[in-house]
Picture 1 (tube, rainbow, N blue to C red):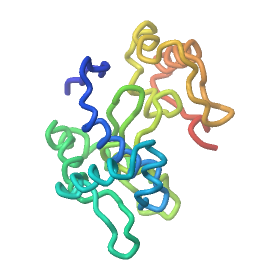
Picture 2 (cartoon, rainbow, N blue to C red; picture 1 turned 120 degrees about the vertical axis):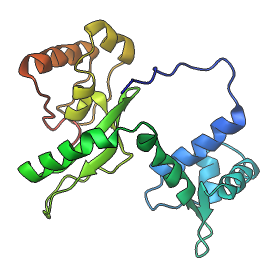
Picture 3 (tube, rainbow, N blue to C red; picture 1 turned 180 degrees about the vertical axis):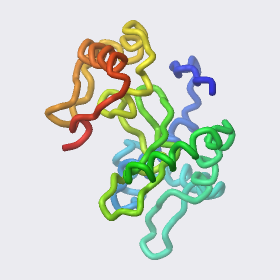
Length: 208
């Protein structure tokens, strides 16, 4: 499967589309209860309530968002779920990895994940759960940082030091636990060790 090009800042940004996506991202990532009121969304996005309301009305037209009849608050709609699930299908990749995914899950009794690289994140596109009460619980569609997960490190294991430096730049990497790799030189050294070992490890780098 071919890798998508890393995204570059566009010369001309369509502001309305950009704001609509910010609304969707807010509902998807910052809303712990699954719903959010118009006033809170307006404050979080630093946009006028009328602007946010018009965006929500348009998103609801396409079922990308919906309003709860009991609370009057907003949440993601099923329309965006339907479109999101078309991404792996459109690349015809599940038929390649699903037999291996389930074989690993059954053999080791652990959750198995498949992810693709999207910028500096690993996006989980499928998983297999064992018949066990104790299991890892990442969700399909979840984004995990490349530098703090075994899955993420595997996705950049074939990159040269120069490519890794270009991807992450000169900024310090986000520290999620005391064990997280926080500099690009450390990550470059870790990937060098990964290639020598032949496998990747997450030693409580994402969460304790």
